[in-house]
Amino acid sequence: MNLLAVIPARYASTRFPGKPLALLAGKPVVQWVWERVSAYVGEDHTVVATDDCRIMEAVQAFGGRAAMTLATHRSGTDRCGEVLAACESQDRRYDVVINVQGDEPFVRAGQLSALVDCFADADTQIATLKTEIHSYDELVSPNNVKVICTPEGKAVYFSRQPLPYLRGVAPEQWLDHQRYYKHVGIYAFRSATLHEVTRLVPSALECSESLEQLRWLEHGYTIRVSETDAANIGIDTPADLEEAAKYIGSATDTVTM
Image 1 (cartoon, rainbow, N blue to C red):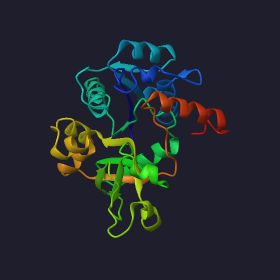
Image 2: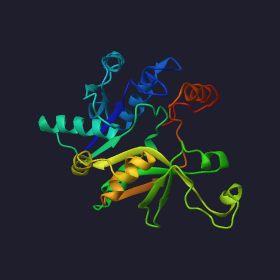
Image 3: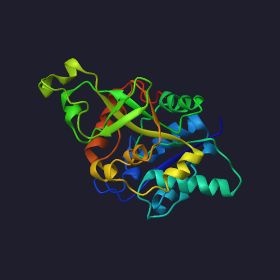
Image 4: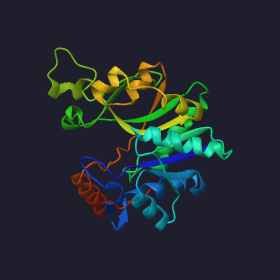
């Protein structure tokens, strides 16, 4: 299977401007992502997609590949689509495109492999990951997107609210009665599917929850969800960066893939 990995890295984050360039243990966050993703896919098949020359220059400085993409893109998925189209214009073809955001410094090879394995099923159009929730605070936080799936591992719905609702049970006790799963926002797409979803207009559900994957579900696409036991530390705020630094300082396997 011919793989392309794209790492969208946007400078103008509302909560943390310039976060791809924030230093984590002496390296820019985006470099952590690129090193881990390229170790799995290969350096020639890994591209950082950005809209800012500062990120472009930083990636080139550590030896990575980067591409300038339009500043008008609404999501990282759209940046992935632009990079794929550019590759195809140069007659480079890929079966599957992996999308790992530039603020995921602890992405693991096992997670990427779990995504790619989903495409052994010819019907898989989109793949993503989930991990089990174990704390009440994590369950109720709107920053943690929850996902429910069919027994076959196909996504039914994503929400910032806890799903399912347990009638007759106090919310504080829900984890004692039901397994809940958090969405891990790493995706893979068949190339044809990526082109299709980037042409879709935002949907009502997507606008309600601010979750682009709901657009895909509303338009009838199948999202296969694989489970991972590793919950990544994404960098959304300066506080997240501090937590990531503590993790690196305390873990004995900080470079484990």
